[in-house]
Every structure is written in C-alpha cells, then in structure tokens.
Length: 387
Image (cartoon, rainbow, N blue to C red; front, side, top):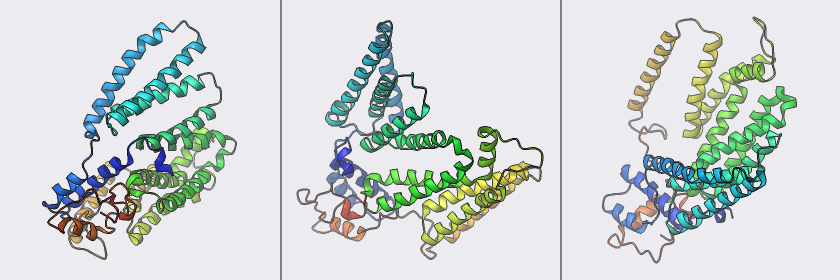
C-alpha cells in the first residue's frame, strides 16, 4: 500500500488534514461555534506545521545554515581526489536525510515546516550528485534518475513541489528520447498526457483522497494544460523554429497549421463545456486560462492594432460578466451557486451524519471509540463512519 511509504505519522496527518476541511465547513456555516472546539480537541495533534510565510523563512534560514556549515568541509577535502569528495558528499547527504527523518519528522513532529524541506532537498541533492557525479554525457540519464527520485520524494514527504518538478523531468525525458521524431512530439505530448489524465481519474477512485487530493489537483491541472499546449499553434510554431530549425519565409506556415489552429480554439471550448456539464471546477478554471492563451495566440499572429485598447475592452467585458454571474448565482441555479460551500466535490459525502455526531449526547466526543485515522469511509473527509 502506497501510504506505507509516507514518512509522517498517517494518523496525525489525517487528523490535521481533516481539521483543515472542517474549518472550511465552519466558515461556510456547516459547523457551528459549539461543535468546532469539540472537533478541534478531538483532532488535535503535536505536528509542527507553521503558516506558509514562516515555512519560507525557516527554509531559507535552514538552507543558509546548512550550506554555511558544509562550505568549510568541502574546502578541507577539496584536494582529496574525486572519489573521496563524492564519498564525502554521499555520506553527508545520507546523514542529513537520516537526521531529517529520525529527528525532525519522527521525534520533533515536523510536518512540512520548511526545515524538513531544506533537510531532504539538500540531503537528496548530495546523494544524487554524489552517486551520479558530473561526468555523464547523456542528459537523459540525469533526468530519468531525477524523475524517479522526485516521484519518491513527492510520495514519501507529500511534497507538491517535487511533483511539479517530476512532471518537468518527464517532459524533458520525452524531448530527449524522441529527438529523432521531433515533428510528432506535439501529438505525442497530447496523447501521453491524455492517457495520464485518464489514469489519474481511475486511480482517484481507489486512493485516499484526503491525503492525495492536492497531488491529484496539481497533476490533473498540469496535464490538462499540457494537452492544450501540445496543440497550441504558438507553441508548436515556435518550437518548430527553435528546435527543428524550420525556416519559414514570409507568408509561409507550419505543416498542418489548420489542425493546430483548431486545437488552439476548440480545446478551451471543450474544457469549458465539459466543466459546465459535469460541474467540474477544475475543467472550468483550466478552460478560462486556456481561453486567455488562445486569444493571445490569435492576437499575436492576427493583430488589428492598438493592443492596449483590445486588452482594456476584454478586461471590461470579463469584469462585467463576472459581476453579472456573481449577482445571478446569489441563489442556486441548476446546481451552481457563487458561495464555495464545499472545498471540493468530495467534501459533502456523509456530512450530515458527521455533523449530527457532534450534536448528539451533549456534544460529547469519545476519542476511544472513533478511528479518525482511517478516513476512507468519509469520502475523503478524513473521519471514518465509526466517528
């Protein structure tokens, strides 16, 4: 089971993630002021996870501290030879990784505190370059190994930046592996990420969405964007000029230009229609972004002049539409409403039963009888049916 690979205590992590969702329900009026303190007490953990700004400061401070300590060590062994240097780098990276897991995560209960990220980023970087070295002349090897490492980091430490970096490495691997058939790369990108998106949808039905929800959102969003960018006329044309050295004279176009024009315009429309029909906020948000990219692409090649006027008018139109929609969706319209009652489509599963459990028996919570760490039966909300 993939959850067994996670470095953190799963029970504590599920409690923390569940409490974050419940606070969202509280802001939406679905949990009242009497219930919230009781729930917070039941979901309390010792995990140290500060706000994002503090995490950034802690990361920077830890990074500077570690590099300041390691700098003199590198200078001392600078003349020891390549083998000794690489061995020292590997040992240092392993020690740093062990300290992060055994002391920071297990003993001190750090959870994405900024200090942990600095520890395993630097530790794994030392291991990576210490083992591979710098003399390999095949970039595909570096990117392939990095892809495997980043996927492991994304799973073990629930790290979202590593997931994004892994997708970047995967794209680089595709470019390097398919260099001989570069002309087909746009179609391959579209097909590959369509398959990966569909696989993600299938996996989500079986995965614990409480833990992996952010991973799926990021992966699905990037996949949909890459499907579009693979068929975007501007991207394909510029890539053909830069990477395939395609020489286009005045008035000349790329092969199958009509096809890429169609993809540029139709894919955003399909995303929007599908998002509206299926009430998928993911598709709707991606469609809005790709519609902007489509307009910019068409505008770039077929400008009518005065772009500042065009942009201003477009902004006014979008603002007017937004204001009208906010007013129109003040009440529910066929399942749509302006208020964000649930953070995701999974949050409403068994919600009534959960809130009822907080109001029965004088608002008493029996921690010995609930198994908050299981999470699966609550549709991604983090509390099992026995709670």
